[in-house]
Length: 239
Ligand SMILES: [Zn+2]
Image (cartoon, rainbow, N blue to C red; front, side, top):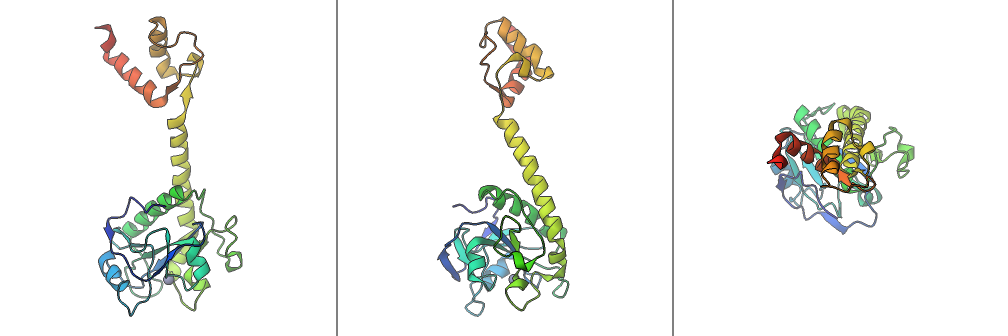
């Protein structure tokens, strides 16, 4: 299990339970209830007075921090069963009072981090019903909030009310990335399958006997096709 490559600052908290007993299938977004930098939040999570931690933190400049390895259970949500399965993320607030707003930079960083967490942990999409009764039913809802487990307002009404939009924004990016991945993995095996912009180039290569002439097994990826067309346009092989 890996951590996010988006992390820009690491300050490990000693306050965690070691390895998770459940695979990651849930996301829990918290609010810091103050405009902490990722550094000051890291200091707090190392303070014995806190006895708290999260896997990740995001400050108002959009900087992303790691406090507890993703493979470990953080002490974030007042629920062992939630924190064994959830990646927990603390987000800084631009104002230390309700509804605990966050900055645009923090929001954008949160979306990027969530897309990455979903991709690495094979979470197909984020699901949000705003329904406490569906805790643990991750095929219906895989986002949870601290207020469902403890008498707290966390993540604040600002972030709570953004949960549907957060899920939407993340899911759109996941879908786009999936399409791009499929494009990258696509193989063209016949001249007919080649997009029109690449056909003249491939025809030329077939005529010259430079690639498989039977038309059955060209095995060209999109990237290969692009390079061949660029080289064709640059007229390199006629020299
Ligand atoms: Zn919280």
